[in-house]
Figure 1 (cartoon, rainbow, N blue to C red):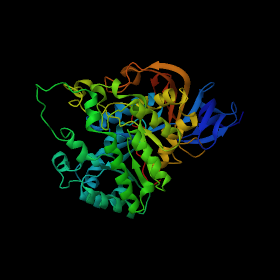
Figure 2 (figure 1 turned 180 degrees about the vertical axis):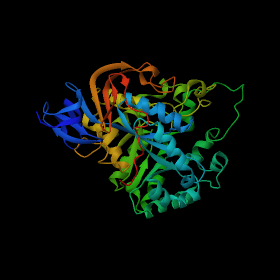
Figure 3 (figure 1 turned 30 degrees about the vertical axis):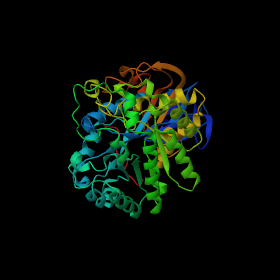
Figure 4 (figure 1 turned 60 degrees about the horizontal axis):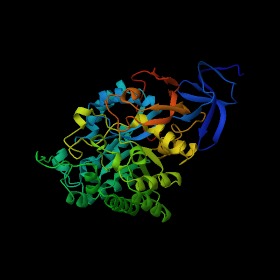
Length: 466
């Protein structure tokens, strides 16, 4: 035993990192940082967690949430970060959009967030106008935000939806990418792949308020799949990546929520051709199929076929898809559920179930290794959003963000289990094997055997570049 006592020690666990593989060790934290990784049973601490028979992972990072979209940011920050601890999530990225000047309005949102988050977070700002593009240098330098989003789904409707003087066409995207390329700091462009000329022609434009005829026939989930075909996603992803490459920005091009097997295959072809882009998929595309979905699962892009699902898992396994997010939205069933599937609100809660679902359906079903699961739920995400090595790894000097997981523990998902504000889950009733027993956020035990024990307001914004 060492003579030194640390603030927190996770002892006798099996540590998993992509860099160093899997090994038995004690992990110690002093303050907010990992201070030692040593032989099992050799470290002691003021707070000790016995991880015998369990695995110790870097805390999961959900890069794709939408806190503050249906409720206030303060409410979402409190309830959803609290729930995230149940699933071993220690950091989230919030895709956040507002029509006003970010330089003028973000101070208030930072204040709301700092008072309420249990874990760390970072903003990725949706740019909606040329005025937003002009603000990019200030956003990076003064606000510490280096990741952004281009919403191809709002092309032609941004004026009506957001009240901005911009149709978000390719001239806007061109200026957007050039401005990012000119910034003297690493940045990331999240890209929503959608060809709206195709999707709008296949049904009512879902981004405008279209009155539904009360006498209309019921529209099931296949209606969404038909309106948002996978090839429209694929074509848009290729187009956006090509534009980024023209400005030598493809290494920071991040294709969000890939839902189609064709898109994943095309991503592989682009990478083989020399493109350096990053692809993300979401847990619902890996664990649900069209036939299983109802009003609760309305999301854009929609959940697709079993064949798409199998291709996505293959592309996660072979390295083509680098990260996994959730597209999490905190809404309530009474607000979410409409008269039919397209009439229901898009988006649903998912972050707390992200890591358990990947462990259950990925690792325990033999689709990916445990090391690969850590890569796509933590390490690669930290790298894509310029958080590494502060986040996404178990090494001395990194933030002490840890998830202690029992790969053999089976629980059935319910809203009560996940402890968030939403009163439903798209995975409700699903038996999932592989759950965190403890979650540590920057050296603080925040979740312990079913109980959230962390502090509201302990989480903080991660200013970038680091």
